[in-house]
Amino acid sequence: MIRFSNVTKRFDNGTEALKDISFQVKKSEFLFLTGHSGAGKSTILSLISAHETPTEGEVRISGLRLQQLKSKDVPRLRRKLGIVFQDFRLLENRTAAENVAFALEVTGARTDTIPGKVMRVLTQVGLASKARAFPQQLSGGEQQRVAIARALVNDPPIFLADEPTGNLDERAARSVFKLLRHIHAGGTSVIMATHNLDLVRRHEYRTVELKQGELVYDSAYDSVEELDPA
Image 1 (cartoon, helix red, strand yellow):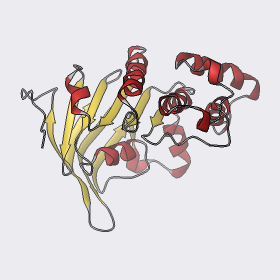
Image 2 (cartoon, one colour; image 1 turned 135 degrees about the horizontal axis):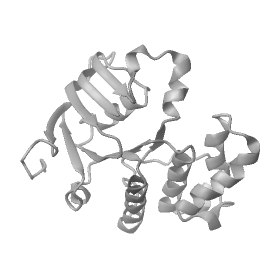
Image 3 (cartoon, helix red, strand yellow; image 1 turned 120 degrees about the horizontal axis):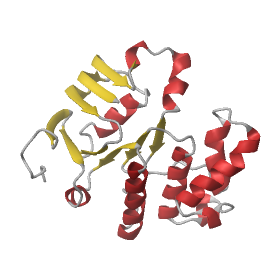
Image 4 (cartoon, helix red, strand yellow; image 1 turned 90 degrees about the vertical axis):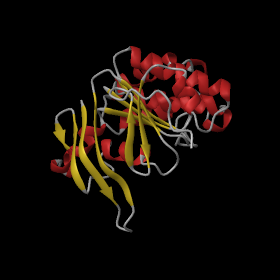
């Protein structure tokens, strides 16, 4: 479903964010993407979502070669993706329901189908009762669940989570991670970028570790059990 082949990403300022990275993510797989800040985790997610293109190598998503995508085809690719971030990125002047609805509006969904779809995903994330609340009226964990609902509303086969628990307390983080596991159990491929190694070690999902732009560990192939604590 997702394939990186000898991918290097070099930015205009000369920074080499990724160095000859190769790995693939299968359909319905859960993958932890680990490494310290600056390791290259967010760059990988940006390549998958076509916000960046590789300097060298090839990235394929569901058979699409990203370097060959025309600009008009990028929205079609992104409709296959659900994306959440550490900082939620909710629209402050819209309610929880309106934030979720916005994701449908921009893809041209039929107006009469939007309310039902919005309530379906808000119920799925446990926030149906908060549909009319504005972001500032919600806790951090609730805001992240609204962001997850917004990312899910188009039923994407691939879900990208960039440090989704980074700004949350332990209880909220557990709740959000439980939700991601539920999403995965429904058949969605989930890639979760995180530097929380305690969380990674507690769960037996595949783990890919980056260090200074290089892939240094992949639990699908390496026998080493211990992730780099340094």
